[in-house]
Amino acid sequence: MVEFGNNLEGNNNLDGNNLDKSKNNRIQRGLLNRDPAQGTVKKPPFSFLDLKIKIATRMFQHCNFCEKACGVDRRFEKGECGVDGSHISSEFLHVGEEPPLVPSHTIFFSGCNFNCVYCQNWDISQNPDRGIRLSEKDLALIIENRRRQGSRNVNFVGGDPTPNLHYILGTMQLVRDNIPLVWNSNLYLSTEAMQLLDGFVDLYLTDFKYGNDECAQRLSNIPSYMEVVGRNHRMAFHAGDIIIRHLVLPNHVECCSKPLLEWISKNLGLKPVLNIMGQYHPVYKAQDHVEISGLPSSSEISEVIHYAHDLGFNNLV
View 1 (cartoon, rainbow, N blue to C red):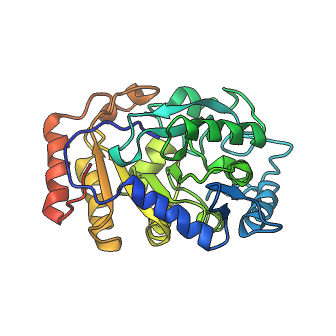
View 2 (cartoon, rainbow, N blue to C red; view 1 turned 135 degrees about the vertical axis):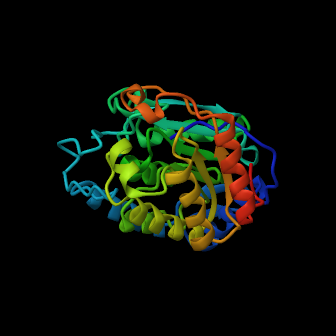
């Protein structure tokens, strides 16, 4: 996960009202049961969300939330992500996310299924036990309180939220307020996990890092990157609203940024909202990799932005 920083002004056809409409669609599909008089969400005797929680709980016991599919019973041991129970590093009203989302109630989970050598949040992503443990009920109450303070959505991030899928589903089952849900992720989920998110997530805020498998394997220790993340972007695009982030890495314009933009244009079209980010800094283990040991040049960032425009993308934030 990388934090947002505006690099350019652009058109944006996605706003908070659209997220609220998406929330209403979820209510109509039976994921939630809203009391029109109170504006709150009431739990029906048995809902589609109950079924999703049951499935996620079983998956947790032979974990395949992500495509690493380590198969560990995470009730008793840690998976490849290093996460057993959910630890929350921080939560707050974030005003630095994309403009349509703010103020966003951002909940940072510790731990991640990636091992990015340049992770901007390495202190929490690579330390899965950092932070505090909260019951689902306690987190639900915090979410409701942040809603009263003005949050436009609840934004699950990290690290990455994927190892905490069962916990997030269980928490949102207890939230009584009508609030849009943002899944802020590297999107390296299994097909089964993506299916659980379908109808549950209102906006996918994705971190599309690479344009090829070799860079993903070398810099994030992730196999089959384009196959998995490409598949999941297609699923997310057809399931709900999406904003695709891309952090420009130094010396990776030709191998990653341009091929990635080409992939999006060919597979998703030109409608997705893009956030091309230039705030990369060489932190964590980046100094061990010469090509990413410095900052991206202004010409590299401009080249990626211009290439997006040349391909026909107009929804840049």
